[in-house]
Image (cartoon, rainbow, N blue to C red; front, side, top):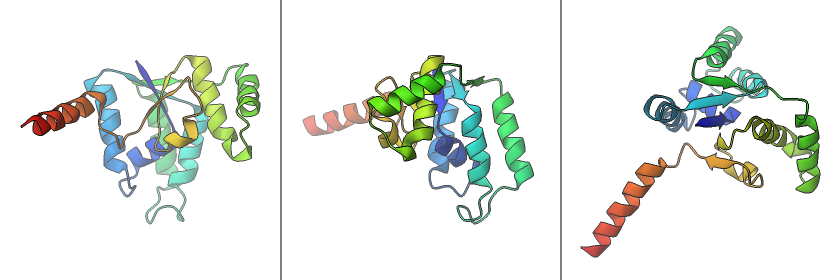
Length: 165
């Protein structure tokens, strides 16, 4: 199974000062090491990653450009990463989604990412901005802050047991 990645998850994974650093690291570790899944990434996500992690307005200690480039290259070249490139139909699909869903200019990049993953057959997306992607019914949103499905089931079962006692 493949999990597509939004920029915010990779930023949180890489930046120890990021608010959701541990949640992102836990999610990726669980997906790759424990479940044996692959991670899908697009060039646009890694370009945005470089832009964000080197920005001193976003981080007290931003990454150097050299470190950001190395991190992006390592992520792209990792054996667990599936490289997803926009195909020739992504432009049309993006425009179609923008029109059908009546999305504005601030939604263009998210829509292009959703269209790129959709065309590649990636149906799961890890993001910290699930509300931005819920309109794309072909994507299952995976929020790193949420417990894993098996963990969530364990939590519900424990709560039910507590109520019965």
